[in-house]
Image 1 (spheres, each protein chain N blue to C red):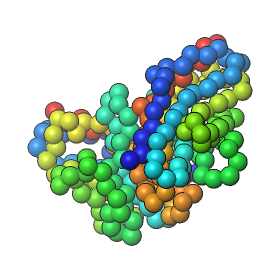
Image 2 (image 1 turned 180 degrees about the horizontal axis):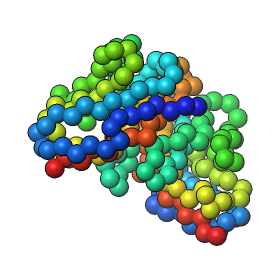
Image 3 (image 1 turned 180 degrees about the vertical axis):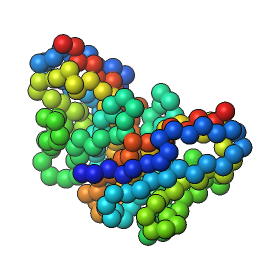
Length: 114
Length: 113
């Protein structure tokens, strides 16, 4: 199964700056997800996105975060005002609807907030 | 709430020997269970999943996993380990009606030649 592609692969930003992480699904899947993995910790769910709406989100996904699919292909995660603790690997995933869904992950974007 | 436990931070096994990576879960309804593998500086690669049916599921690269409802476990197994299997393995669960995967803390598998 082909994965998604993510850009950039690495990003360094200053605390308080806005960052936009991008995900480009290779095939036409319906569900999109963002997860993050803080160094040395477990992978955590942030948000799921379906039909241009958030379908589920975690406690981590507060007002600082937003997602959209502005042009019908790229799926973006925006962090409005980054904090040091936002430093992590951010993974995009895609899936099909249905109970048997498998989520396929991209290679990730490593975000470092200084 | 859904949760996953991987009790071993690291598993060491000699090449050619069988391997087991343990996973237990907790969900309020029917569980959908997954194993992913992560190689250094790579994303998560899907290995296999249990949705329903046969308790023994087979996946990529010769891996298999056994679903045990009474023990709420989903251990990953392989009959003969390869050095190239060395990686970080994550168990994940999704309960019916939810989209989010909940991951375990990961188990590092080290296969020695």
